[in-house]
Length: 437
Image (cartoon, rainbow, N blue to C red; front, side, top):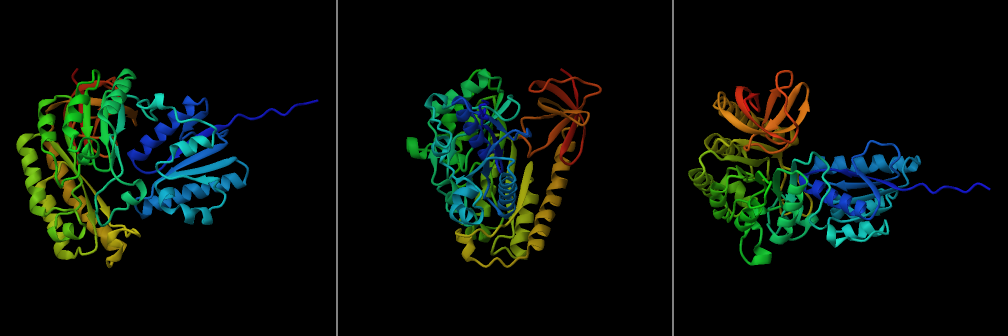
C-alpha cells in the first residue's frame, strides 16, 4: 500500500517598499530559519508553496504596487500554484479590515509589529537568542540597522505613525551586539535607519542619545563606515556632527529630509521649523564639516503650495546646493492632517514641479561631480554590472545616490572590498574611476 509523502513547506518572503521593510523581512527570515523552516527571500523557485508579502502603504504608487502583488499571489493560490498567502507590513496594518473583505483568498493579514503572530502560523516560537542576528538578503558587506521603530512627529502629510505606531528606541547594547555580529560576518558598512533617527534615545534614556550610539558603534572592530539616514531637522542634536567629525569611520554624510523650502508650507506641513531655521542648520553643519554630503528629500504639491511657494522651494535648492536630492509628489493620504486640506493641484502639475526641481538639482550635481575629476577616493565595491564594477564613496548611500563606475576590462575589483580610485570623468549622477590601489 502506497503512503502519501507530505510535502515540506517552502516559504517565500516578498518585500515591498523601503529599507525598514527589508530589515523586517530579514528578521522574519532569520526567525523562520532559526525554527527549522525552509524560508527564502524574493525567491524565483517554483516550489515555494507559502508566500509572505511584506507590504508598503506609504503613498499611492507604493500602495498600488503592494495591492497588485497581493492580487498576483491570490490568483496563484486560486490556480493551486501556492497553498497559502500571508500579508504583513504597513498596508496590512493600515487597511486590514478593507483588505480582508476585498481579497478573501489571503489566509491572514498581520500588522507591522506582529512577528510573533506570524511565527505562530508556522508553529514556531520567537527566539530571543536570535535578537541582534539577521540573515541579510543582499551582499554581506553592508547592512541596514534599524535603531528605532515608529514616529511621534505630527507631520501633516505622513501616515507612518498610523502604520508603525509611536517611537520606540532599541537599546544601545542590543544595537552594539548586532553590529559585532554583522562585523564578524564580514559587514563593513552600517546604514542606520529609523522613521526619525534624531529622536533616538528620548524614550529609553530621557535624552537624545544618537551621538552616544554613534560612538559605541564606531568602536566596533571591523566596521569601516557608519552612515546616518532619516535625521529629522527640528531639534537636531549638533553633538552628532561633533562625533561625525571626530570619528573617521562615521561617514561625512547626512540624510536629513527637509520636505520644503517655504516657511508657509512648512507650517502647513506641521514641521515645527522655517526656511530660515533650516538654512541656518545646514550652514552650521557645513561649518563644522565643510566636505559633508547632505542628502535631502522634498515634496512638491503639498496643499498650500502655490506658484510663489514653489518658487521659494526652487530658490532654496539653488541656494543650498544639496549634494544629493530626491523629490516626491504629494500624496493625499486619508486620516492624515493634510487630508482635511484641499488637494487642488492635478498630478500632472505636481509632477511638473518635481521634474523642474530635479532639473535644477541635475546641474548642481553635475557641477559638484566635475570638481571630483582628478581626485582620489576610497570606494566600496557593491557589484559588477554591464562591464563595470560599481562602487560608492563615503558621500553616497546604497541605491539612492551617485555611483563610481570602474571599467571591468581594465581593472579587477572584489565585491565587498574597498579600493582607492582616481576619478577620471563625471556625469550628473555618476563618476568614472581608475583603481590606483
